[in-house]
Length: 244
Image (tube, rainbow, N blue to C red; front, side):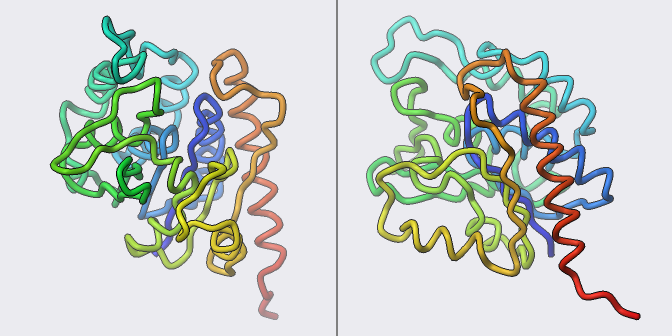
């Protein structure tokens, strides 16, 4: 079963659109999709089988108002991600994750334990709000005893989560490095071994010089995602054994 792990990176998440365009052209359609932060937003739309062309339209037109409104009292965050509910309407109302056509999960971080939390069932909007809840910008999402914030604090590229959902071969798209202070289970050595696995195809768009907090470079970021994917797929195909 093939999987797609989409990493976090703010506005750099537009690169995921280019990735999806290239995968579609190569007739690669992963059945498991997992996203962290910005990757969860693009991943959810893809898991809902929204046409890639439509995802691109929305991303090109998006600004912060698509994800959050300024809070009148920024006690827990400057932005209120409730505006994300309006964006979710484009996926068909208030879907449950388990009802999406493709297997999907968003990754958040439990602020108390600093561990990754895989959100693969329940209301999609809650999972996405948690996954993008950058501390200091968005208020955390509280579910039961968990205080959930941006998934990038624990797993900015959710390859392990895709594998836990059943992916035996995973395409990982890294936009940004992991956070400096990782939980012990997410050491740099562990991350490197995941990305070097023969069951993982890594895509690393060249995004130097692009801001993760500005939409001005979105068209070029999309192009960077597309180019990196085409190159990675070609290199991967060249490495496959050829049968005479």
